[in-house]
Amino acid sequence: MLHCGCRYNNCVQYALSCLPFDVLNQYKEKLAFVSTGESDGFRVARGICESREIIVLSERILPKLGMNEGDSEVRYFTFAVLHEVAHAFMRHRSPMFDGITQEENEAQEEEADALTLKWYKDYVRKNNNPLLPELTKEEVERAKAKNQAARDTAYRGSNEGLQSDPR
Image 1 (cartoon, helix red, strand yellow):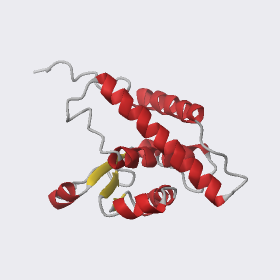
Image 2 (cartoon, helix red, strand yellow):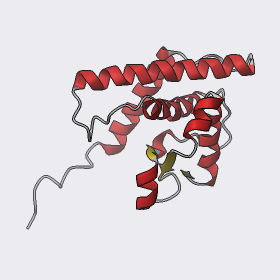
Image 3 (tube, helix red, strand yellow):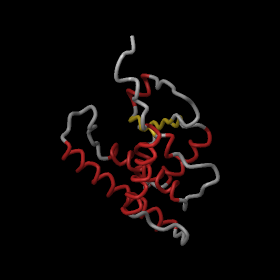
Image 4 (cartoon, helix red, strand yellow):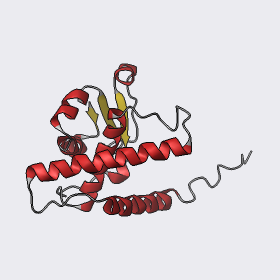
């Protein structure tokens, strides 16, 4: 299930095409991707929540119109989608809801990163596109840092005034 808006559904479909066929075939009906890229909010029906892994994509990482698979923003978006699928594939537990330790979470993140980079490398090699380099851990770390800075800037000061009740 894709609910990321017409333009962004195509971006998710591209990212999913980078998965090995057997993984995509096994998980295509077990995943739901949602984003608020084209709306302020929405509700995910209970039936979807009960039968699928819900993957929420930040509108901040959605690629801009006209970008191609070689653009760094598309590459990071693809990494993020595949990374979340890797968590589902490896049946990782949620740090938010399953009470795992920081160390366990970090180990899961490293494991998901490694599998994601392998899937992407295999995709690049299979398609033999000389204009599409393999994704590196360093490239991902730069993109993560850039997105963290954008998130910090976007939300800086957003909690001011919420600290105390003016009544």
